[in-house]
Amino acid sequence: MILDNMLRARHMTKTISATKKLLSERGESNAASMASDLIENFKTLDDEQKSEYFVHLAEKFNPSPADVLSAAELYSQEPTADNFVWLMKVFESPRQELLRRLNRAPGGTHTIINMRHQVLKLLPKKPELKAVDADMQHLLNSWFNPGFLKMHQVDWKSPAHILEKIIQHEAVHEIDGWDDLRRRLQPDRRCFSFFHPQLPDEPLIFVEVALLPDIPESIAPLVDKKSPALESNQYKCAIFYSISNCQPGLRGVSMGNFLIKRVAESLKKEFPALKTFCTLSPIPGLMEWLSSHADLPLDHLKPAALEKYQEAIKVFNLKDKSWHDRLQNGWHPDLSSLKEKEALMALCAIYLLYYSPRRGGNSVAKFHLGNGAKLHRINWSGDLSKKAIKQSAGLMVNYLYDLDKVEDNHERFVNGEVIYSRAVSQLV
Image (cartoon, rainbow, N blue to C red; front, side, top):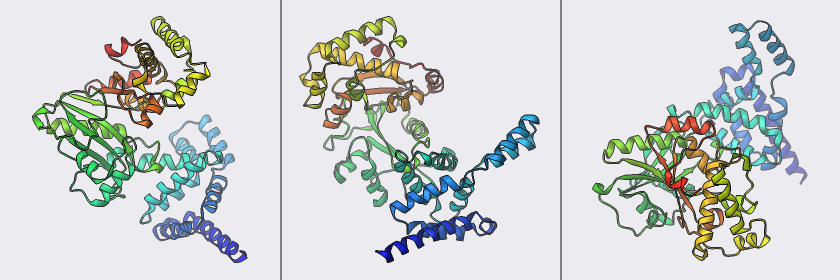
């Protein structure tokens, strides 16, 4: 035990020493070799020591408060270009330069992504690491700018290790083995992924697309591995039915919105007859919202929507514990009455229309609406898997991408407005 503790202490000491060397003047000229040394030392740390190391970065590598204050006062008095540049220089934490130098080593980019993943897992219990996370995300946003990313189609001829990662990281509709994956890569199904030059064998994010005659209402036919493939003359709609991140350490780094738009442009060139680009999306969080009594500031609701909301609340009596027990014990859309169906559809529409633009609103809705899509249709019994019923009562949504209007729709959503169809307006 004593020897183990001594060895652990030695590993930590060597890692911190390697960190200081990398940030030294010698580190500026020998960054690649010293960065490799830091990476190797960091690998020797156990999870507890890695946590201690991140705390060390949070406490010892901050900008000097005195220097920041002095530079800010100077710029306030004389807002010249030179004073602004100086302010930016002293305002930046030494951690950012450390990460830049670490990135010069072979495997440095991958190491930083993994380090951020570990920091993200620690954040709930160690909020003091927020500054470390912010520095990592700031740099990763620059390094993974979509201008640097390469979009590639993943097909059955792609390398096996890429296909394995697609199976592993599919986060929306689980891929049930190789036969399932093969069906999802047939000509009427497409998979596109972003790759980074520093991580050529690592898909960063991928989107799955179905080429269909019409906008679908349910997911089951799209992921049925025994379904027959359609002929290209039947392709009228491109349906984005799954988008998955492969790198947890890149959370918050914007890539998915650019990927969808690039895929749409690519498919439109390949199939000029494609006129409709739409999603079939889950609504994670809907049932949780209902379980918390559908808490929503009522002053934002229009009179007609407020009336629908109050009627729907009465149908389910959301404040009654029996409703919550029912949600947790085998509730199924097929067992609902017409009145319950209408009430649930109305509540879902209100949730997406009025809650999505707000802080804490539905993450999937925020993604697509913020990306310039329109709330096109809410589908009853869209996904009858146990997971979907638990999360969203089996409801699914079509978000419509009108490529000529996405910029305007994005701007309106940023200002708190959700663009929606007549079909949705009829629900509220």
